[in-house]
Amino acid sequence: MARQSYQDKLTEVREDVLYMSEVVMERLRMGLDALEQKDDELAREVIEGDGEINRMYLDLEQDCIDLLALQQPVASDLRFIAASFKIITDLERIADLATNLGEYTLDAERDLFPDVDVQEMGDLTLDMLEDAMIAYDTENTDSCRELAARDDELDQFAERASEIVVRDLIERELESADEVEQILQDVSRLLLTIRDLERVGDHTVNIAARTLYMVENDDELIY
Image 1: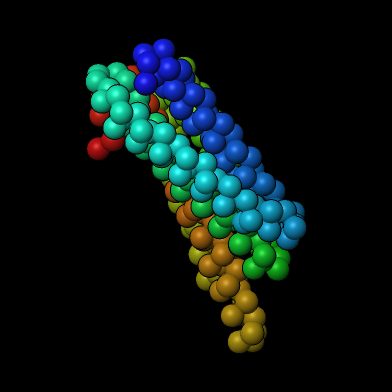
Image 2 (image 1 turned 90 degrees about the horizontal axis):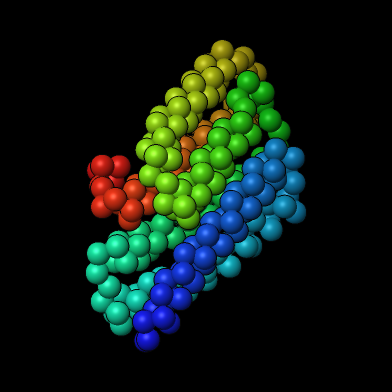
């Protein structure tokens, strides 16, 4: 592989990682919209689209492996390839969590917890993910460190939301076994939704951590 071709390939990997992130963010937004609108058709579109993201991941994984095997990069190039490899793994897992939202939509019948704003939490995660990918693209390490602090806010949001759900369940008066079963299913679905959005935030911090390592050889956010 000629040197210019090698540099072109590094640029292509960066562009492909950014494109994959755009698709993943779109699927996450679709999953949130499906959940909010109880849109089964949109939910199925999210679920069925997961295969496309898996193929993107495998193609990019192979590109990274080829660069490592054929070029034996050193220093900054090696960190870039390693970081990109880890970032696409986090993106693929975020896509899996978006698929979960589609599945929860198909299972849901009604929204019994109006005090829990899943959409606000979803917007927070999407903003974080977008900022993490901008940091990767622009090599903005200050933004990487800020994202770690923002994840603490997301964790607190998730904790408060879970407390609201549990408190509501305790205080609710239920009259039949069928009603109890239905409520428990709804509670389980909502707690899983909160957990999955919190995990999106965790993967976003992973992306920021790998970007910080890529740019400054600093692993402070990894451990």
